[in-house]
Image 1: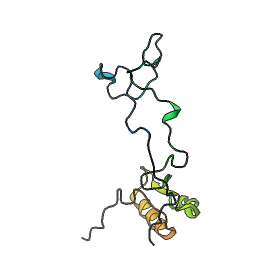
Image 2: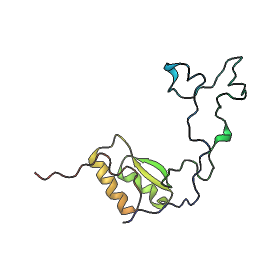
Image 3: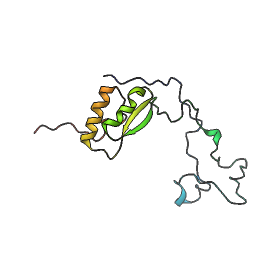
Image 4: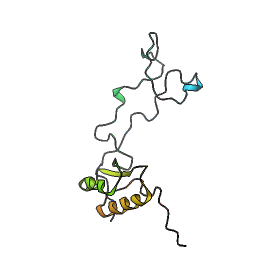
Amino acid sequence: MVNPRPLLKKAIVKKRTKKFARHQADLFVRIRDSSWRKPKGIDGRVRRRFKGNVPMPSTGYGSDKKTRNYHPNGFKSVVVNNPSELEMLMMHNRTYAATIGHAVSSRVRRAIVERAEQLAIRVTNGAAKLRAEEDA
C-alpha cells in the first residue's frame, strides 16, 4: 500500500529555531553547551530583562496550536514497541506516524513494518536496524 498523505495543510512556522543560551555561557567553557537555566540572582541583568541581554524563554515563543508537535513531514509521532500497538493508529493514519522504539529487536521491527504497510501507516524509522537478507 502507498504511504498516506498527511492531513496537516498549514505551514509549520517556528518563531525561534535557535536554542536559548544559558546566562554567561559564552564566558565559561564548562557551561557552553548546557541547556537553559533560569537566572535567579538578585542583580541579574538577564532576569530583569535589560535591553541588549540574552533573551529568556517565555510563552510568547510558543508554536501555533494547530501545528504544535508536528514533524516536518506533517505527522505527529507515536512510539510503537510491537505490531499490536499499530491498531490504535489505524483510524488516525493521516495525523499520526509510528516511530519504532529503540530497544525493539530486528525481528519485531520487520513485523511492525509489515503490519504498518497493511494498515497504511507511515513509519518514520522503518529502515533502521534492518539489513538485507544475506544468501549464503
